Amino acid sequence: MARKRRATEVFSMSFLDCMSCGFGAVILFFMIINAQVQETTEQDPSSLMAETTKLEREILEGRKNLVLARNTIEDLEEEQQTAEGQIAQIIQLIEQLRAELSKYDQDTIAKIEAVEQLQADIKTLEEEVARLIQLAAEQETEGARIRQFDQEGQGSRQYLTGLKLDGQRTLILVDVSASMLDDTIVNIIRRRNMSDTEKLRSVKWRQTVATVDWLTAQVRPGTDFQIYMYNNTTEPAIKGSKGTWLTADDNTQLDEAVDTLRRTIPTAGTNLRGAFEAARELEPRPDNIILLADGLPTMDAESTNRRTVTGRQRLNMFRDAIREIPRGIPVNVFLYPLEGDYEAPIAYWALSFETGGSMISVSRDWP
Image (cartoon, rainbow, N blue to C red; front, side, top):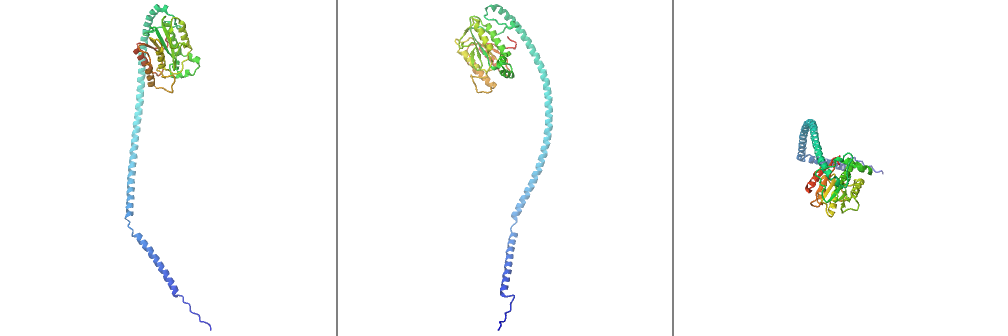
C-alpha cells in the first residue's frame, strides 16, 4: 500500500529562525553605525574653532604685513628717486670742480715755470761767478796736476763749489748697479735687456765715468787714493788692490782705474752697506770719502730673497749702511737723478751735512 506523501510547508520553523536572525543582524549593524555617527557628531568642536580663529588671525596679520611691505617699497622707490637726483647734482658739481682745478693747475704750472726760470737764471749767474773764481785758482795749481781732464768743448766747465778734495787718503765709491743705466725705471728695464755695447753707451753711465775721470784729475801728487765699485758686491777698480791704498804720484794707476770703469757694465742691485764695510776695512782709514750714487740702496747683503722693496725698507737699509762709516770722515756725495726716489736727496744731504762733507746734485751736462 502506497505511503501518503506529507504536505510541504513553506514557512517552517527553520526558515523563520533564519529570517529572524538575519533581521536581527541588520538591526544590530544599523545600531552600531548610528552610535558611531552620534559619537562623532557630539564631539566638542571648541578645538576646531580655536584652530580656525588662529588661522584667521594669521591671515589678517599677513594682510597687514603685505600692506606694510607695499608701503615700504613705495617709500624706498621715492628715496631711490631722491638719491638719483642728488647723485646727478654731485656728479655735476664734481665736473665743475674738475674744470676749476684744471684752470688752477694751468695757472700754477705757469707760475712754477716762471719761478724755475728765475732759479735757473740765478744758478747760471752763480755758476759763472764760481767758474771765474775756480778758473783763477786752477791757473795757479794747473802745473801741479798729474792728470788732465778736458771734455771736448766744455773744458772751461770743470768747477765745483763746496767740494773738498784735500786729505792724504781719498776713497771714491762708485755705484755700478743697474739703476745707473738711466734716469727712469722704464728705460732702466729696457737698457737692462739690451746688449753690453748699448749698456756702456748709456748717457747716465758715461756721465758717471766722466765724473770719476774729473775727480782723479783733481787728486794731488803725493797723496793716496782707492776706487771701489759697488752693486750687490764691492770690488776695487784695480784688481788685487782691495784693502790697500794706491799712490797718486804715477798717473798710470789712475788711468787704469778709469779705463776699468769704462769697461764695467752696470748691473744687479745696490748694497751700500757693503761699500761702507769695505771702507772700514782700509788701513789706515780714509780721511775723505767721495760717494757716487743715484738713490737709496735696494739690498743690505750680497743676495736677497726679496722680489720687491718698499721706500721705507730702502730708507732703513740706508740708515743701517751709514752706521758702518768710521767716525770723523767727511762724506762728499755726487747724487745722480733717479725717477721715484724722492727721499734720496734728503737722506744723502743729511749724511754729508752730519759728516762735514758736501752734496752735489749732478746736472745732466756736467762735467
